[in-house]
Length: 142
Ligand code: HEM
Image (cartoon, rainbow, N blue to C red; front, top):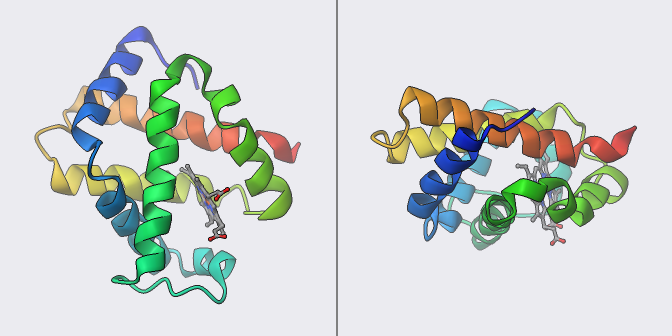
């Protein structure tokens, strides 16, 4: 997935609005993923992933903050997410089909809470960015 200069500018400008909402957006995106794709819950066995749980909120924040960091290093997302790629492939062994599922729900949450932000061009750039993140996180499976 190649991000153009315009995509990168769009994603950075979107993230200026998203910063500060990481916990709420991350928790809602995870919650929506768990509800719409119940198989994704199996990776969190033993954890309280109910909507209001402190675990869900703290994990949602971690996920979104990793994306905030990727946006800050948008020219080198691969290096920035290198350790997380190892963790997801070798320790957590998350099936690669699940990354686009989370990306989809993150995009959905942004659209629900910031509809004015999600113009067609912005939708396309954020989608490409989240697809690139998914590609990087699955790159260690080969
Ligand atoms: C852990 C980010 C997708 C399952 C983590 C952590 C981060 C993260 C930052 C914490 C790592 C640490 O503490 O060292 C992301 C990002 C994703 C993504 C940016 C894609 C946008 C997924 C998906 C699943 C998943 C799709 C499964 C359906 C897990 C699990 C943990 C984890 C089970 C460990 C949680 C724990 O031990 O509390 N992820 N993740 N991740 N991730 Fe992901």
